[in-house]
Length: 300
Ligand SMILES: [Fe+2]
Image 1 (tube, rainbow, N blue to C red):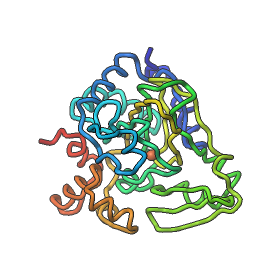
Image 2 (image 1 turned 180 degrees about the horizontal axis):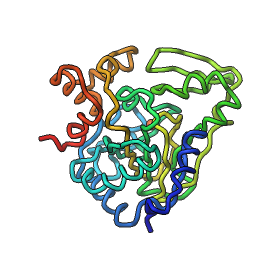
Image 3 (image 1 turned 60 degrees about the vertical axis):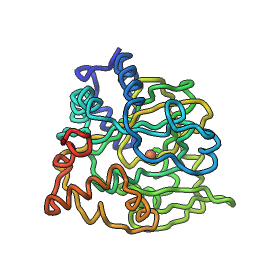
């Protein structure tokens, strides 16, 4: 049974997002919505080319990346049109602002295996924005305790490393690594800032909420997270909403502050490259709302 908006405690959800960076809403999607999204995964286009690293190649063998061996996909027009009203109404309930669904992204394990990070592509689009949400929903999952997302709550991070909280809390596009002799290395792909906290151990602050298919893990767009690895198949969908009046700063989208970012743009990111083209064609002034039909495939 779906959790309908009229029985949802939006105030409690917004408070949890502010304090911790995430919140679980059980049974968010009904069976019909889960089945629809799983079927769409097979017909939607790839978001990015499959990774060329050894692990992924080993998992895929020589087979083309389809079905269970596919890494990711992005929603098509039909996917947006079916789920948009529900998602935008829910996002408005949480933020109290207007909301536009601008991205549907499928991620599948075991091909997807990401380190501890704050999302990059979406951060370069809007920068920090409190209305920018990430609805992460498993559709196929081996069990409630496996193949989820591992998260760093803001409150736990603040207790262990006030400096790192300060660096991350109103920023994004970063990654963190545990150092061999202890401590944590933080690198911002946004500002280029590097920072080592010798006293922070990531494993001591990470939490892994239990989730089943159709449960919603609602995150702020910049909540620090990592893949809970598995050799079993897990298919999740990540839906992004943000206030459509958010101005898009073209310096931010096309700027290349780090080598990683330069190679990303040169590789024609499926999110940022169309935005760059749209901005160029429209005299370098745009809001997120102006871009949505381009990003969703609804602009012919
Ligand atoms: Fe991510």
